[in-house]
Image 1 (cartoon, rainbow, N blue to C red):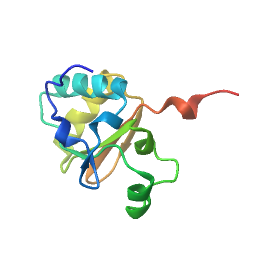
Image 2 (cartoon, rainbow, N blue to C red):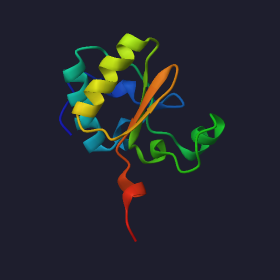
Image 3 (tube, rainbow, N blue to C red):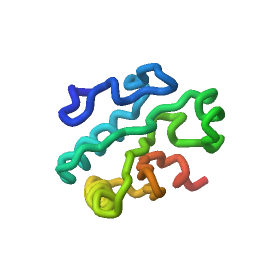
Image 4 (cartoon, helix red, strand yellow):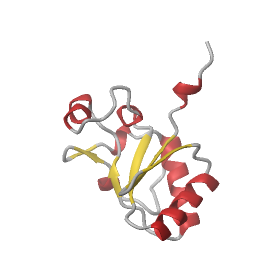
Length: 115
């Protein structure tokens, strides 16, 4: 992965430990694209999680964060939420969750496998 333009590796941490190396490179490329499109800073509040950290914060057992395929982006008002959401969709994110205080974006395609 080349150096990111809009994000520092230190923005990707789990329980106080840098976890940038655990992040899916495709997610990072799409996140960079979304950030460029939005022309607004993204504050990453959650990225990769260890199983222990995920359990401690009440995350889902099969969370996409456990595979480095998801991020949560802080968002505290509807105007910023619309800009970020629009950019994520244009950048190709199809798994998006909207909360009162953040937007969840992931590229975990394991849920779409047909057996």
